[in-house]
Image 1 (tube, rainbow, N blue to C red):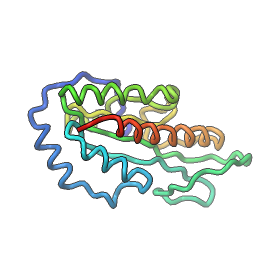
Image 2: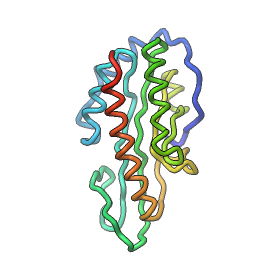
Image 3: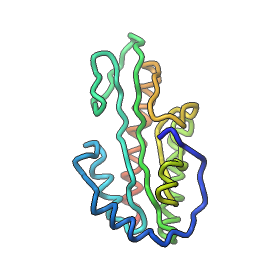
Image 4: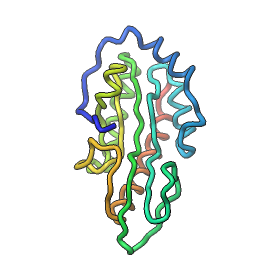
Length: 178
């Protein structure tokens, strides 16, 4: 993304329904990281939002160089560097009562670990579709990057935060109707 910005206020979006239909029509479930397929499917059933893009977050290290790797890191003391590719969910949210409730609930997901989870906008998404918001798992100091190199210990912390992040999103999804 590399274009993370602070939250923007909702704007009138007369093309919302058309853009949502287009997005659902072109949604390729096979391109979504396996651990979050059900989550993306669940958000696609809500009438007041649609998914723009998502990523489970990937850790590349040592011999593990597959950019779509979903294997868990194991405890290690070797201190090798890890390339982390950001975990995130980007949604377009309808400017409606239900959309604003979802927006508020999404904002509370950051409470899991405010140093590693941000809720904001990404300029690239906003330029294509206003009322686009992103929740991401990334060290706050790197919030504007989509890939970073970090130490193994910090990668383990990010992995734990990412797992709690997606679990919370699944719980959130169960609490909204649409």
